[in-house]
Image (cartoon, rainbow, N blue to C red; front, side):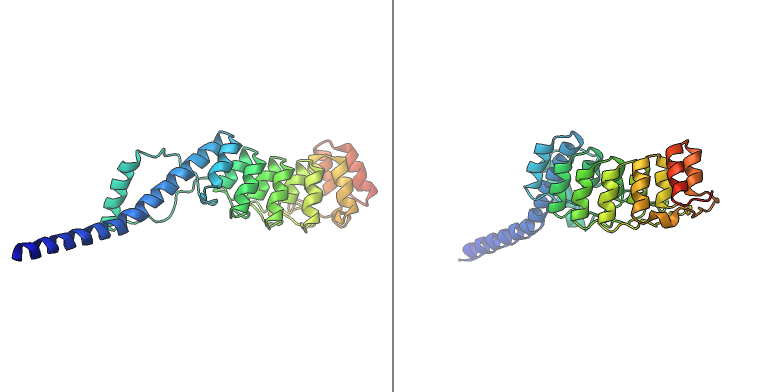
Length: 258
């Protein structure tokens, strides 16, 4: 009887140990599986493999995860290492400032991946490590389709980078009328000024596209035709500095004085 009782105690202790181990190992394993799926998704985005990226997103990968340049080591090695950390109470906090998947998808001009990431919960107001809103990235890349997706998911149309630039300023300077019109239609401030005091009209004048300047003047920017920046420059002066004589002529016709 005593031997049987001892056996039952051992079995009970073993069961308790297995249960405790399961409580620790199961979350660790699930977390590692998610990390591996995330790594493969990011690799697909970097390689421009849109179909593979979309397939990984359908598996429920975190759409707001950041990039990691470290390739995963063998799975069971990770399990053992993670189990030891969990046992010792070594909890990883914070994250390295690597690019988010949304940033990578925009930089590689993968509109369908951007759309899928946003639909999976990616933050349309993400800011890069350099302080640049992702909407600005899409504008700089002249990706009207991506801009459409970001705005549809409530990206802040007047978000600013560290220089105080808005997406509309960049679109006006980059001579992309379609994106300029899109941003204004979503409420972009046509009178916004950056930290140097430069207006949207000044950016357009520097960009040198008469069509954009003409459109801006017709949609409210005429009020800024004589506004000066912190250095005392006007839109007409900016046009002259960049040898945009047709733009300069348009500005004087709109009432520019200097």
